[in-house]
Image (cartoon, rainbow over all chains, first blue to last red; front, side, top):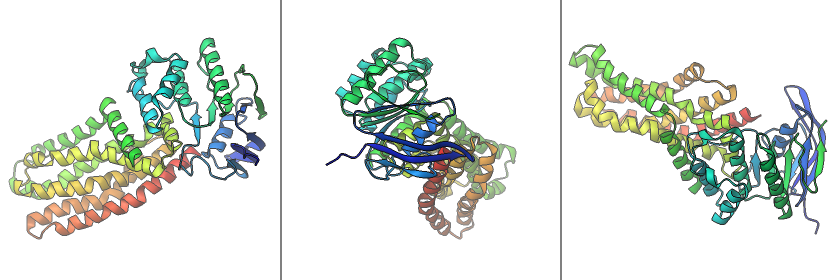
Length: 205
Length: 221
């Protein structure tokens, strides 16, 4: 039995305010795939991710998740994907630990996975700090830690390495490879060049 | 169901540890009620007649002030997206936010009402009808107000425009609430008004979160 691809975008078109942003885009995502979406500014990388997740409605074509037309935002029976957008969904008035623990609790994350994610990104010393004290790069690392302990196979991430320094960028590239090798799949929109073993490129120019 | 209470306790924690917006609305309510008898003189008869309406008006404006913050901050920083993708329906998220908002804005109004009853000059034997109308009416105020608050997320700014949209929708509750107190004072019995107030609650619970969820999804597109 051929396994259905985790995510499939079949010939999708998307327009915003009359302007065609995505035209005839195709993508298949299987287990272990890393797809890097490349394109100039305004070519629709973020829009493509949002179309896959279901935030935007496509005008033509279809998006299939595990072979079905059920999009993550519209049928929230179970957690289907891990999402990282350019907005950091963190609350500035609380500490790092409180922010992370809320999502760990919500997603029923086991303690060892949570600890592993924090240790992997070397984030242990930030736990008791209020988020308002963190720099932009450190806030981004908070989001990456949350992404790492998220219990889903598919990662849809938008510019994950913004504000990160070289060292942390390398650590995250290794994390991406590890996730893919464990059977996960990643769609990453990035205009930074990422140093990963094997990946497919989707160019939106 | 467990997710619902997780969301409520999270919002509650945010309000307590966050900025003082919740306290501001509450303070406005208390100050408005304290100022009212000071500014309108000390004629007991006149005060007793208008007191019910004045308290309800203060409750209404205090709700208008605090409703803006429910959805806006979560929408703007991307938390709402993450919550929807966590397997929780957007309608349930909105109801959870309404509940936590009521716990921090509506319930204090209810609890403070007997004390403010004395301050504003309402005859103390009517404290129970005031408490009951506030208890039944303030959740509806929150629920009805959530839809314009969600629409303000779509537009991107709130303030006066949202308040102007919310005010006519909240008028029935104001009229029924103050009418209940007035009827009780004049001896007709306010129980009929209470029933009508109680009827608004399930209706708004059904309709408003659904509309607000539609507005949020529109805002995302």
